[in-house]
Image (cartoon, rainbow, N blue to C red; front, side):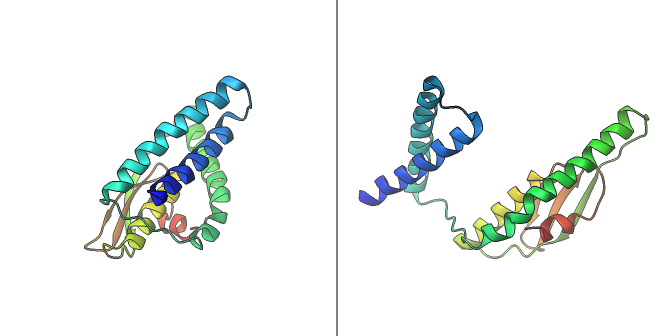
Length: 158
């Protein structure tokens, strides 16, 4: 029971902090809404975790690799804004592409699942590239890019 409460509380604190980061105000109605929303979300997260169906074990050291992600987002914003300008301002055609590139997907363990999820999320945070799926049998990640570039570059950033 203590473990469940500790996990719930950890979720709640993290979600309250995330809420405050998003709303960027300490107005009483916003803080109250954040506290309540975080409680509901923490309860849902703990119910799901308690089922034991999802195994997710990220490594703290992986966060160090994510330090390059903000720059990648800024660079990709430039790429997408340039494409938007070429399409709307100059009426040039745009053609997105699907690309598959090598990605060691790992096994069924919790750490491999966390790695796949975090890589897919981090790559998809960059505006130009979206992860469509991971083929675990062939160790390939399929991505869609609005402006064709080297998708492996995105995975190198994390």
